[in-house]
Length: 177
Image 1 (cartoon, rainbow, N blue to C red):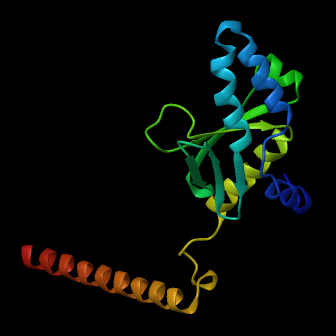
Image 2: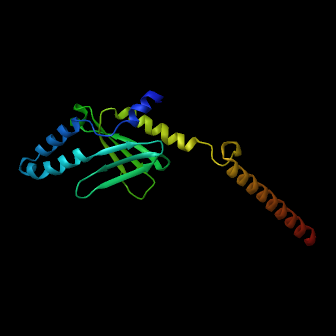
Image 3: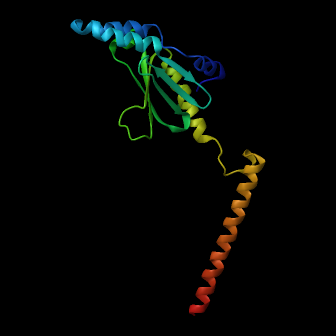
């Protein structure tokens, strides 16, 4: 479980670790004839990649010509996976794959180039659980006065409908006899 100091450090993350750029160079060098064509998009991706962790969710954006931004609220997160290959582990990096309940088979967001990936994963899990564990409209004490009044009124209406239904059922039972 993360503490407040760890949370503050994670909320400050805005850019991937510099080792990600080295990893991109090595990945592009894996196919030498295509290196000139692969390195330019990798450079733009690395230098424009930004993360933002807030109290409501995470966002990731990148790109120059075609800007792409993904925003995910913690309430939508279904699962979190860590994935890294041998070279990424050598550089101390990992990708955090965030899945939502969308129709996609793969991850909705892949946070790349994080060296404190386990802390970020734990932070996301705590936020995800925190959203799901917060009391909802079941207890009027946790709501604002207007919301609490609405919940109370709706419960009274439900109780009145229940008693009306029971009395109608009782009436039809006595008429059948």
